[in-house]
Image 1 (cartoon, rainbow, N blue to C red):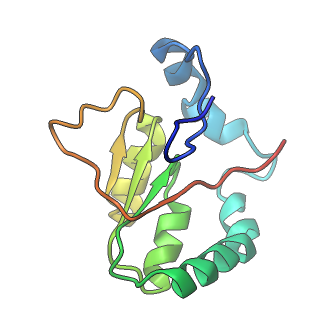
Image 2: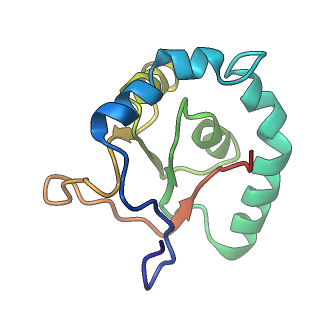
Length: 135
């Protein structure tokens, strides 16, 4: 399904919270890729450079960029290294969002975009970025 205005795609019905918490546990990150989850960082830099080159042509770096599905925060860390100042993330996995906050000092909120309580802290941004690979 997709939202009418922004074309955000989502699954309906949503998996249960307990299913998602179990799926995105530490085991997911330890077993997801044969060489370990950290190998994603090195193998993704070319893709990230292409995305940021496009964003740099379209936007100014004071734009707020939010990544949906931030995992360990590798892409946001790369954005900061390339001069972006206002980057945020939203990640469903408590394990990986805590890792990104502790390891890299990133501003990544833990939660589900569909169940986010926007009254507590609204997410305002100018650019949404998702890093998804086809299986």
